[in-house]
Image: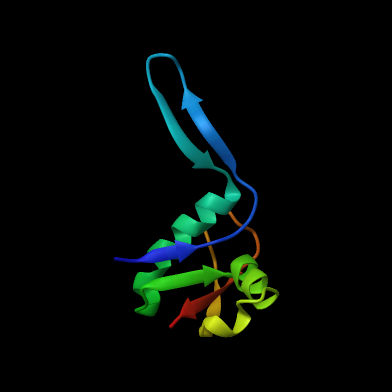
Length: 89
């Protein structure tokens, strides 16, 4: 199992028509989380965290509870700039 964790704004709710209707989340934040999940294979990790989540944790009272390892910047489909990723140990 692999996990990609990212933080940011999303659109969440029941989306669809009266025939087909589902609760889901959408947006750039969700897409990046999905790309991070897939990038675990490249790094040989099980949990990858994006920069926004890393910054949010470091700014919180939980900063010392997690051991993040800076890994690299990766090019993600649909993004111009490379994304910095961190492994969660």
